[in-house]
Amino acid sequence: MREFWIIFKQAFLTKAKTKSFVITTVIVMAGMFLLSNLPRILETFDGLGNDGAAELKIVDTTGQLKDPLAAVLQANESDITLESTGQSESELEKQVQDKDIDSYLTLSLDDSNTIQATYTTLSSIETSLPDTLKNALQTVQAGIKADELSLSSDQVDSLFTQVNFEKNNISSSAKSEDELNQARVLVYILMFVIYFAVILYSSMIATEVATEKSSRVMEILISSVSPVKHMFAKVLGIGTLGIVQIIIYAITGFIAFKTSASEVTEGLGSFFSFKDINPITLVYAVVFFLLGYFLYATLAALLGSLVSRTEDVQQMIMPMTLLIVAAFILAASGLGNPELTYLKYASFFPFFTPLVMFLRVGMLDLPLWEPLLAIAIMLVTIFVLGWFGARVYRGGVLMYGPSRSLKDIKKAIQLGKE
Image (cartoon, rainbow, N blue to C red):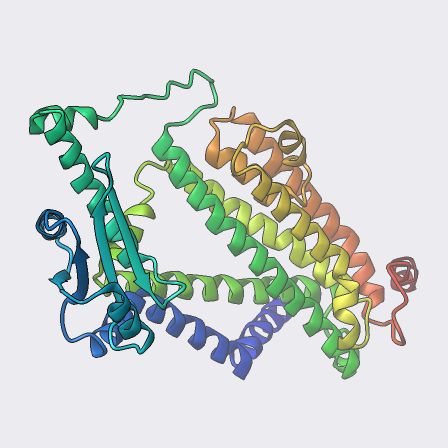
């Protein structure tokens, strides 16, 4: 076991000390703090160019709409200030074109007492101010029509009373709406974590094995330690490094959002609270993540042992990459409806199980035997793949020359017997 832990430590520390790993980790951590404080930063820059409330010139041809509109904007705590002007529309339009003013608003009433509003600006992407004005004018319009019909304020409010609509799902696998929404978020997170962890760390394992082979270091290593110990030490060492990095990201993200008080982060905090999630679902998240990683990592080590040049690694692990991409697509397709029949069958295929079965476990109340059976299938698959991978790895690390295809597996097994 001493040799195993030496290789484990070497795999962990060598990658942890590389500039690319350190720089990537620091950049992602800095990015989390930047994103969590982005609203505050944007407000700061917005404040540099905005000395006060937005002033909007208004041409009210009726003389009756400006004051009600201003009252509605004030009630909505809007920072828009309306300024009446006696200038003609052509003069105001020229000022907009000359960029003396940003925009102006023209108001009038037609024969049916319906407000006719025209907002004039040079900006083709501005939406916030026009939408605010439109909503406020809709409230003013409701008031005008209420006066015409001699309706009291209580009668007007009754017109907009919300319908009491409840969804009652009697399916045995159904969850509450809050549970479904939070489970959907958790599934999203796990999908991306597993996807990027498998792509990044499995590729790292395969590249590490190929690098040692290309530098002939492998010949020295296998003379003092068995190839099987070497393979599993690599898988566990880099896997532990990946888990540590993910934990660092999680802690950094938690601190970043907790230390940046804003409406956006507070909203995200309540959205990601997971207070309605069954704790067993979080347990399944950890289990499927670990099983998924070690399944693909063992396969990556097997494939990496077949190549002797780092340039061939990506080509050799392409089938594995396609498997995780297919699993990701299947899981994503079931976010809207996890009860689809093909998802049930796909969730028991070991290379799809980490994403697809967790999708079903997170969003449905499945009988206990289904996730346990999927976990058992994955454990058996990892054991078989580890046993087979050890045989391939034993001969594969001694193979040199250009890699042709997966047909080299047979040659590796034969070489490992000698």
